[in-house]
Length: 510
Image 1: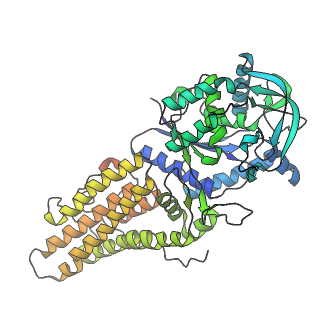
Image 2: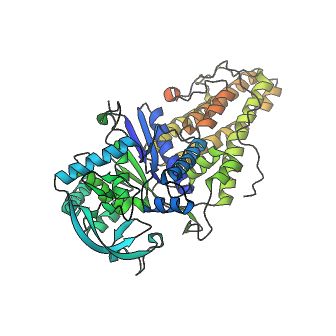
Image 3: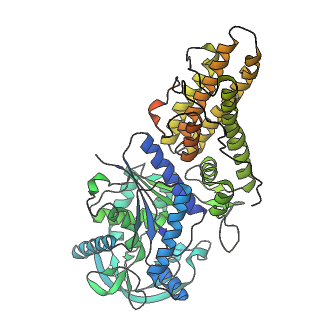
């Protein structure tokens, strides 16, 4: 049975982690956790792209071998993933021997079939993008800033017959409406393909670049970093005792919008097609985190360092904010004040204080023991019905990648639990001499406890540690499972744990 296979773009070894990297990893992790909880056998892969001219030059400036630089960067990204609780199953590095061998086999196959040829070429070359560019790539008559220096060079190189398959790709995208998500990104790809595309230069002479995978048919060249990097998504599940049929094609291939065209949406599909591999089922293309409506950049000084927020507030509130604020595929502003508001209001007040309040009342009125829940009691009908609708809607939203909507619905339910407690006032029931007050008190606390348990279960893909802490506080098994998403007496006679603080008060000084 094929596994549910999800990949992120592999990060480039010429930089350090920023909020875009953090968001992509968190997004993939939430999808992977949701799939696992839904009963799927998940394989989640991320990794590092290590070859290329920029890596070689950065290492040379520091007087260290490129591999040493890559080792440092790999440690940085792995540390970020660990801090954020990213549950990847495998971390691939393009300097791994099995990846090098696989890339060379693919190059040889394409060369032997005539899909790669040698020719002299004069063209404009972008150092930053590490590729040849064309005048049509200019924006408002100027090269994009991230192209860096663009110069004309003449070289003899090897080329992949990309334009030969342009019509096929156009037809494929048209016949597979779910191939690129969100759908408006597919229109951008088609727009790019309206003009004739050039064949892809897939080599660099060693006299100009030595840090790369050597061409198997010409020892004087290494392969283009993008050709090397794009093949990792298959090489990572095509070595050792792994069977490609168990993994491929990827169910979700997650990338940022800046690398959709042309690399992932033009080069990669055509490479796969010619190599006789199926294409990923969905290219999930996310937007950028902005600052006051502008793209974050080091030069403008508006970059958000995720480690600052993680250190101050913790990794799970950071995960929550990113997933709550951004609609998948759209751009979104990162706003400090809004982050603090989400932390204080949603997490601290609505969820954290709710749990503390209910647990404290359980100890005050029930010796810490959660009463058995009578689901037929009319006093909890509205709460139970609201859960039924919320549970279905949140699961549906998760499946549709509408995580911000799902969290909005879930926290509306959490807000209603608070309202339910206020309406029923257990503190008054505890003082009442009415014969039915004690029964009603136990119904209210049992229903509130069960509602919190259910909310925690659905929060788990986004905030797994928090979900487990909530379950522990309610005396339940901390291992999250969606096998009991029904509103029932699942906590009967469990002992609630006092003094579980989910979200400590913060003096935000960032």
